[in-house]
Length: 429
Image (cartoon, rainbow, N blue to C red; front, top):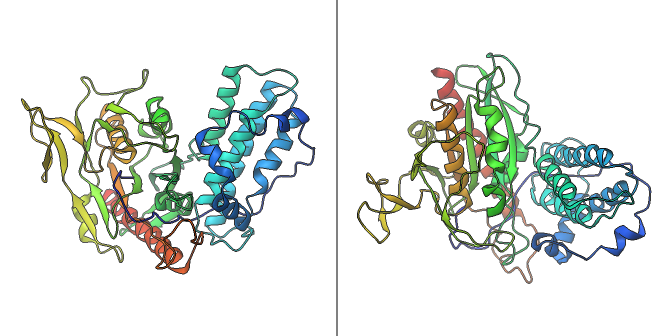
């Protein structure tokens, strides 16, 4: 996503419905005693009216309660690991199934809504953070469980590309909703598209099938510094029977248009994340992952941007976006460059800005350059998903409206068409 000021960012697409959980044991007194202690900034927003309505109208309001009841029945740390990962995966799978029309809708909220996944996950992390089992749990063990829940409930550990070369392999990523202090109703169309596309197959122009696997990422600087992007993508960038043939990271960008971002910059601009934290620095690369040394200031897309722009994929224009902000070699002040960076310059904003959308694009393409430079991939910005006229005030507005749903579906359909164009170019090679 971009750190630009927009009209209230609307709501996403694609998620969960009725719960598959069958847990019945009551939560322990210890669990309930810690029900309000040590919540994160994101978890603290759960009590607001909009998140509660989103959960209730999608059938996801019970996930937090049932997950807590299940934790109360766990008696060992190994059992906790299995339970947490399994329930995280169940949440992701239910979100994908709901988005793709499988299983009960769970309520009247449109199936193509990404917000229930986000808020239900936070309810689960809150329960896990406050859980006090009888067998004792160290801080490092709790952190490991929280990490497992984050990865499994985001689809990061269940990217399952089929073996063999008869099917193209595509990895697509999206993001959580963000800017929620301004409007807790917001969602992210990139996350909605990820739910709608996960596990689906598209047909390229040559007739060759292409399988799409997806994951979503948090809007938190710290997670990126700790390597969540590299950990998720590296197994699929390396060689092997199940390696990716194409990837695109996706986030929400400007109103009214798609952007294929040509260049990504190694700079964090400091805009607050969902945890209200700011980071202004060179993008930090985690230890232990393959990378390019010395760290480059810029990386470039290898998506077939010219073909994507020319293809006529849907109602929104698609732009080959080349602008960056740099400090020129020998200079001291940032300069905007409409046609990309100049030699020896220092990055201050890539085509995707200086927020986490630029950073995921930079990290993914830097990893590509380190392990498999010929892999086609890059970043796509979607249009901003906006509420309909008369529904823009977060203090009095509704959590959804017909314009919002219609636009969200159009964005997702065009993402699918753009990915299909890119896959068709890869199949042609």
